[in-house]
Length: 422
Image 1 (cartoon, rainbow, N blue to C red):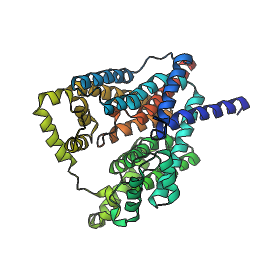
Image 2 (image 1 turned 120 degrees about the vertical axis):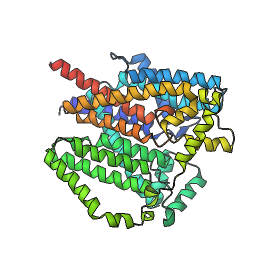
Image 3 (image 1 turned 30 degrees about the vertical axis):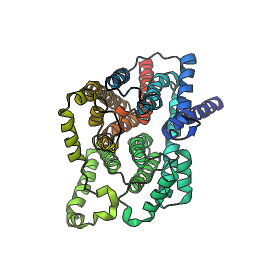
Image 4 (image 1 turned 45 degrees about the vertical axis):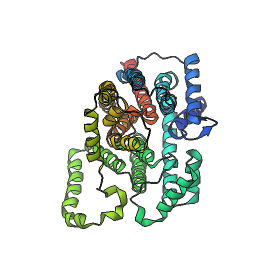
């Protein structure tokens, strides 16, 4: 590698560390009234506006997100919640930051070195978060100190989390936050980023494939400690996809799947008699959210105004419970936020995102661009995860849009390279 190329890559690692690390991990670290993420985001916007250039048209998903935000503002005006502190904070600190990512990334991350730098920072972030997660699961003070410094939490809440970790009987509680601030966000991060950092699994290079396999093992261990069921499902789904779609002989795939099925059948009695409380919350089936969500949706249907513009108010304890119940799905949470007026554009947005990501996945697999394919799979894993949690594209996920824009930019670079050679 030439010295100039080395320093260029080093420069982009620095840029990516400032931008990507801030967006993914520093939303809870504040300088005065503003988070580090917001400071970096609005600084990036100013830089991209003054010095950046973009030759690409936005994808349909990007355009629809702008439409979605406009409708979101409109329904909150109609619902008399547009001037509440919660709505304004959500708009400025989350949705506008997502819009900045859509606007700025094509103007900043538009070279192979820049995408590579972002990838390196994501890998480092994943490993760092995994180490902190494992330390916290063992109640190591260093793990909690690091997690609390990067994403501060109230001291009394930290004491509760440490107490639950110390009590083996409380394993059903999901409290290990890593450097993400919340255990749910930690599960999202590991399940979403895993396909990105393990894309060498698709390659035929044995040493790099082994490294990816090690990262998968680390991810599974972290998911167990985090105790997020959907994280386990998404990680398992990804592993199955690797087995099915990896370019290996079909005979080997059949053998691998047969071994898994045979093991399940052979050990079926042991599986059925296993004390799943030992696995904590991962196999804890008592969950009333589905029933409660149906009840709340029926209440929405009986109230025409609420059905049209949603219920984006959190005033008292009862309404907070409504927020918790209906918010555990990306689509029902959209209905809560803005009723049918917001739900319809969100359906279009969700479809556009899925179609774009699937198209990128198919193209990247054909041309052996495994990095871009891994990014597309990571975004799809996020969308799958959002079917059982309130964090999703509808709530303004900075993690999703960061990865999505890197994926689109990486895809555009590869298309440009192929068109040039043709």
